[in-house]
Image (cartoon, rainbow, N blue to C red; front, side, top):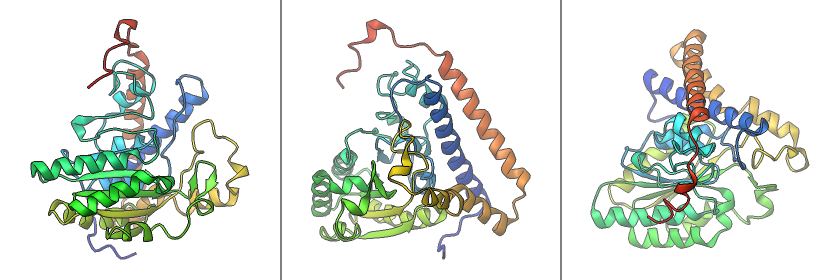
Length: 325
């Protein structure tokens, strides 16, 4: 694939490290669930890391994102710390929402993350509202809404696209098409082509290989720059795949997803391997350097989890706090 804005070695290594952090974080979350150390469920982002990293690396710290129930990757890519992320998932008071948001509702305003949301497509409306705020304040920011292809069956997304187009708001809508809306192939429930939908609102769109972090970065960078110049919203469709089930308890995927398909995406289409192969081929990066990065990230994950496991739970006296803004 042609990359008009090729990454240098430092950027490439940083992108690889960020994606690896998300992957190892999600693998650890899966283990927490399997060993009954985490309350509730989680929706893992493993396999889709290139999208969160490729998009968020085009943003400034004060730019906004809105996320989804599968939002750990977005949160980490936008600058959240591993230790506070783990604390939130474990319901600890040291978490980003003081342990009261959990896996599906993490927010980190300090890094511009306006929050994950369990309501499918809801982030599109929130990001559009943020875009209106940006325009009224003339603050030169950009808002990005992440959502899955299942959200393309929600009316709110189209209302948001309509308003953003009419008012030329600085919003980039990122559709992560992982091919399955919960347990159903998306083509069984979504008619037509996804790219035709934003076109109905005169919102320009692009489609990109969501497994190649360079492709995502190069596709979204001009959309973000365009929005920042005040030229209105844009839509990015990323072809991707979730490696785990719809949620951590979804262990019988064979009844709706072919095993050969899963194997293909995990081997030939893995975003970490695609990035590593490019680094080795373009810059002759030795395996030892990637191993060093892997160890550094593994240590960060280990220390973050230790912090979270030792952190206290909220006290009963805090029950009625943090309910209203």
